[in-house]
Every structure is written in structure tokens, then in C-alpha cells.
Image 1: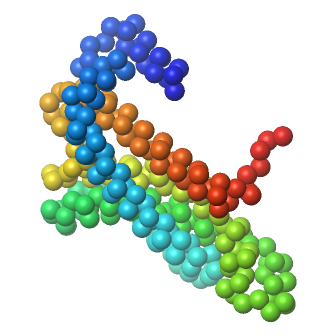
Image 2 (image 1 turned 30 degrees about the vertical axis):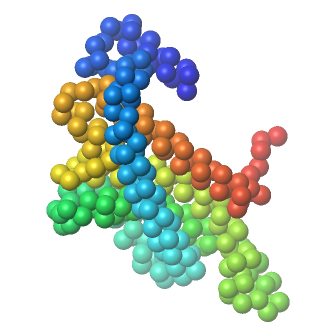
Image 3 (image 1 turned 90 degrees about the horizontal axis):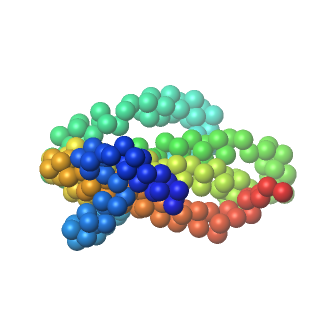
Length: 241
């Protein structure tokens, strides 16, 4: 990160770019100092909407993944729908959602964060469950285990590494969805709206400061997922020897 910031500062300096072309890292502290209250307020709004959308994506993704993982018929039926839905650029969906639910900005933002992030979770859980070795299932059934026991003792632990891998991807996607709505919606709030305000006023240091703030929030949430992964699926980590 230090190398990245130093290289960024060097490129701006060596090309003699003014801040209305490319803000440098040294331009950002002044922007944070001037708009600190807005960064705290809007950053919190962006964060909680993203987290709520991500939680909904986990719930729905797990549900769909379990259905597709345990049923070949449902997998064949739902996969084309999910792939087709995921192939639609969410930037084209944002204006439609904003018009459908005018004024319901919190709902709109959470909805887009959910829509853009549930797909990798559903797919990873489905693959994890559908590739469960049949020998494990047969042995447990022969010992009298119920379907629920098989799920909790074998299927769920096996799926956790794939689930957390998908969740790391979903974290960044959820932030993309949140900020798309915050920028496009006429009632937008959050860091996306602050970025749009900087663009309208040609305040480039503010725009770049928002981008860095978004990156920091994404990194923090990513490492929250990493911490949860170590707690619940740390056994699956294989350090290269």
C-alpha cells in the first residue's frame, strides 16, 4: 500500500498534473479535513446498507444453493435463470429500481447490493453440496443417520470453504451495488452521493478521497469475513509448505 501511494504521488508529480486532472495523495488530507463530518455520516450509511444487502444475499444464496445442491432437477431448472439474471449489467437495472420505488432510497440501495452479490454465494454452495462424495452419504445412512444429520455433519463443513471464498467476492460486489444506487438515484445518500457531489462541483480531491474511503471500507469488511472464515473454516486452510 505504501508503494502504491508513493507511485501514485510520483506519477502526478512527474506529469505535473493539476488536481482537476488527477488528484494526488497529498491532496486528500485537506478534503478529509474539510468534509470529515460528511465522510463519517455518509460512510456509515453506505456501510450499513451494504452489510444488510450482504446478509440478505447470504440468506437467499444459502437457500438457493442448498436447493440446487440437493436436487439435480432444481439445479437444472434454476441455473439458467440465475446465470441469465447475473448476466444483465446491474447498471441498467439501477434506474429501473429507482423508478419503481421512488423515494425508498434505503430499500433501493439494499436491494441492488443484494441483487449483485447473492449469485456467487448460491453457486458456490450448490457446487459444494452437489460434489459431496456419495460414500460419506451411504455410510451415514447405513448407520441410521437422518438427512439433517448428514447435512450438519458432512455437507455443511465441506461447503464452508467454498462459501467463504464466495463471500469474499460478494463483499466487493455488494459495495459496487450500493454505490451504483447512491450515485444514480436522485435521492441518493452515502459515499456514492458524496462522490457525485464532488463530480458536479469539479472537486476532484473530494472524488478521489471518496474512492479511497470506499476502498478502506471494503478492505475492513473483507477482513471481517477472513476472521469469520478462520473461526468457522480454519481447518481448511493449507499453508504452502
